[in-house]
Structures are given as C-alpha cells and as structure tokens.
Length: 125
Image (cartoon, rainbow, N blue to C red; front, top):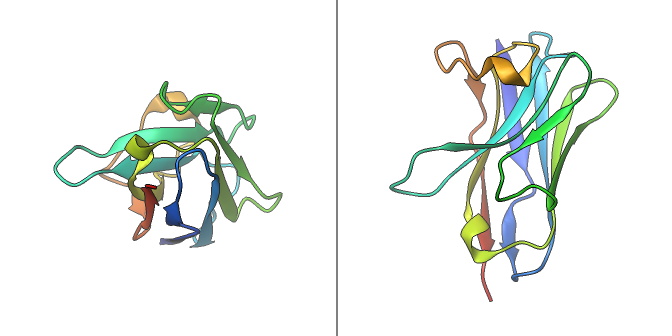
C-alpha cells in the first residue's frame, strides 16, 4: 500500500505562486514515476506533470510548461509542484498519484494507481 498526502493549496492572486507538497509513505515509491493531476468539477482529471523514476526527467502539460516545476527530495518520499505565474484557469483540486511504474511515458494505470485526497488551489483576485 502507498499513502499519498497533498498539502500547500490555497487562495492566490493571479500571477502569484504556490508550492504543493505530496508526502508518500508505505510501500516503496523510491525511483518510481510520480505525477500531479488536477481536476475541475464537471471536467476530466488531467495530468499536469510527471517526474521519471529512472532518470528524474520531467514532463509537463503544455499549458503549465515554463510555469510549473515538479521535483522530489533525495529519499523520493516527498514530491513537490512549484507553481508560478498562476492563472485563474489553474484553479482546480490537485492530486498526487503513482502507479509505481518507473517511466512517465508508460502512461498512468489507474487500475493499480494510488491517489491522494487532493489539495484545492484557487487563483482569483
């Protein structure tokens, strides 16, 4: 079992920054691909970013590329999403997830995936 707990969400003005954290515990997640998703009510959950467990390469959804940065600590039990220049359409609940695969480009297997409860980000003036 893997437990994922997100934190760091909140209300921020457009152009502001937030840093989300995801604490991972339980079955080893070290050097496994870790992902951030987001979801707006009424819309499908979308993958925002992934960090590759094999070589720490990172992948970003087009609308956040250049503004968001995914990273982990050395123990690979904390995953971060640094978000800058936030826009109103970044408003969503953000989720940390892993299916314990190693590579981002394998895609996310929701059938075996683990999810956190999410943290709400609201970008509004």
